[in-house]
Image (cartoon, rainbow, N blue to C red):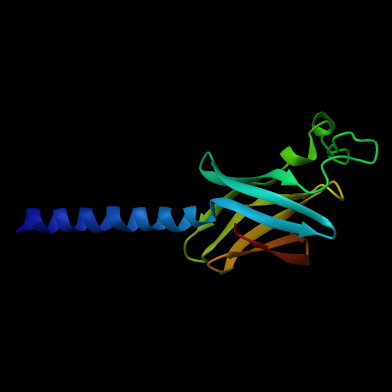
Length: 146
């Protein structure tokens, strides 16, 4: 009887672990990000023990001269030659099951060349709430999932 009880407990723990990972992986996929007249596709992927989001497409890839636009405002000078359709916007977020959100990372705003703390949660099954903050100032936006 004791062996059966131990086996059942082990099975329940592994099911709970898989469910938590599955919940965390709900973030994976491609989203539509809009800022003013700029529209981007942003893909969330696993990155080590967390998640990252990278731009994969933009509606205005080229400037008026026909050149691919670059991340010229990046505070890291080594990244200023990154094409705007390859910028990493969110990095190092991890899932907090108790809160039902991803946090602990940062979001990059290439229009300002600034980094902010970020928290992510789902408004509904297909809409991601992205909340960036710097001190007491916060701003939220919503990204629909493709």
